[in-house]
Image (cartoon, rainbow over all chains, first blue to last red):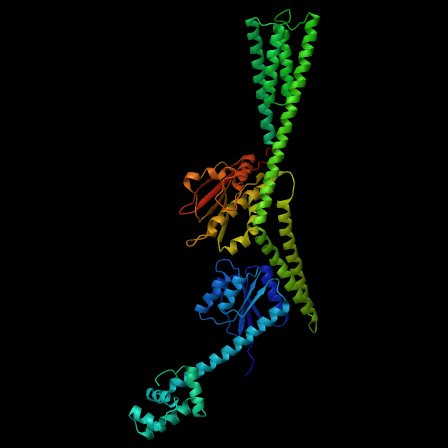
Amino acid sequence: MSVEQPLVFVVDDDASAREGIEDILQSVGLPVMSFGSAQEFLQRPRPDAPGCIVLDVRLPGTSGLEFQKVLIQAGIRLPVIFITGHGDIPMSVMAMKSGAIEFLTKPLREQSLLDAVNAGIEGDRLRRQASKHVSELQLRFELLTPREREVFALVVTGRPNKQIAAQLELSEMTVKVHRSQITKKMRANSIVDLARMADRLGLSAEKS
Amino acid sequence: MRRWRSQYWFAAAVCLFGVAVLVALAYACLLAGVDFATAGFLLLVVVVVISIQGNYVCSVVLSVTAVGCLVFFFSSPIFNFRVEKQEDVIALFAFLTTSIIITGLSARIRKMSEDELHHTRAELARFARVAILGELTASIAHEVNQPLAGVVSSGDACRRWLANQPPNIERANQSLERIIRDADRARKIVERVRGLARKAPPQKAAVSVREALREVIVLTRGEVEQNQIRVEAQFADDLPLVWADRIQLQQVCLNLILNAIEAIKDLRAGPRNLLVRAEKDPTDSVLLTVSDTGAGLDSEKTEHIFSAFYTTKPEGMGMGLAISRSIIEAHGGRLWASDNVPRGAKFQFTLPPYREGAP
């Protein structure tokens, strides 16, 4: 799979600080989009790419920490790197608790910034791949008939065909047919594979 | 210049009044049959008392008038400015000398105490200003740190642009431009803070309220952001310049803004807004308003807040508003407080406009 071009979002109300960060990231070849406020970030269209947000804690209007909450609520899962001019401990604890991956103080040390940004992008890329995989599985799962889904849920619990047939009041033969259909539609190689897919789709908890 | 002129008219009025009193007193003494020496003593008392109000020229005029009165009413021939007796001439000369020396001394002492007062007031104002800067340290540090962060980042970037193969000279140059810009920004902030702390006598000049206020708002930005306050600044387009000491004007604004922040700081709920507005009032003066949506004023104590050593803050000294009011009044303006609608407090002051030629 080709590596997608990453994108870093910088949100800082101070032009000097913002442009400095932008410059560093661009100098190592990272594309950057920057915003002067949280509102601007939410309003402007953003390309869909693996990336992370470099976010100032102190922002006019919505503070950085509130903004982080808004992002989570809006389903924007980009990793957040906080930067602050005055790193106080309670604030950094709060930021890390709500899922920030790094908390850096201004003036920024170039290497820590780049390390954090790269880690953020990598993390986002993995997350995106995983969620892409899940959505693909979802599509396959939708091809199954209601009956096949019932059989699927039982197969992945490891029950033999006979038991499944009894439980669903079907012939053993019919269960076998369903089972091969399921394996084909889900493009699974083995029963273990199917079980793993069920896990990803969050089906394993359904009916035992 | 207007103050000088008004002082001049005041002195002239005192002088005229003094002359009238002296003539009336001398005539009254004559009618009462008082002798030369007693009349001279009474006139001298009047001259000294009145010249305390006027200036030195006024004292000389009054002394000469008193001598004139003595000659006219008391030395023979009476009702004539001729002096015939030699001892009268000596007495008159002695009177004139005494009068001028005494009034001269009193004028000198008055001027000294005025200078002293002026100096003390300026010192007090500076002391309060430095105290304000103390409250602002976090904010100032933040304000200097931002451009410095920019300088460091742009410097790092510049090095990378140059290290690229081939070096990207254009981008490196852009980074350098930004470094210079940001360093200059930091320098300006430091300069402003130094200006506020400097020990310099108040100096009036034509000042743009808009510019002076902008600088103050920048200095308080850190404080504002930290307390999540929304600041709105409104400046009318037709604002006249004012004749003021810029530093003292900024001090008053800083004081009012910091008070407003203080009032909003501990609010649990409700809007956290601070409005700074400068406009022209009907008399062409500049009207400045700092209003907040904070806890508001206790209506019974609204006037007390301007008294020295009155404070509602645990660490307050209670000098801020008292000094602010004395500064504004020394500029020929007025400072007052009222309730903000729907909530909070509102502080307003006026400053007379600068008029070219006759400021």
